[in-house]
Length: 170
Image (tube, one colour):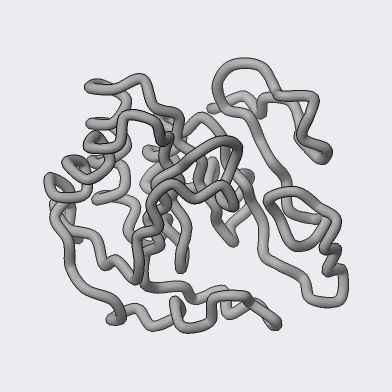
């Protein structure tokens, strides 16, 4: 398991499509969910993208004082050790929020202590696989209604339809 590097497919700076406000979005490579109709199937390759160090990613993130952070992909939970290291550093050294998209449900993540380590550093988790047959282009920050916007810290923002209350961490 690699803890100091992340396979990165792309980085989008000052995006407003990956959570509220300006965000630095880290799109990782690697996803085994293979959701039919995925908007980013090029991210499925577990050996895709390029290696970037956690330190270099952190430096890029803090260089933009206006943007919060998004982890997407691919699926960051397939590189949970390195994403946990990055998220821990972000939380210890900045006041930035972190949103994370995953094809796993929070229940699956909580049932696996190895994956669950990342949850303590996230502010919001958007969970669940994209289901093409349920696609809804009117939803904010998700593609199908089975996907939940889960606030892990703080209060849910009622201006984002589809949010759900805090799911207690075990």
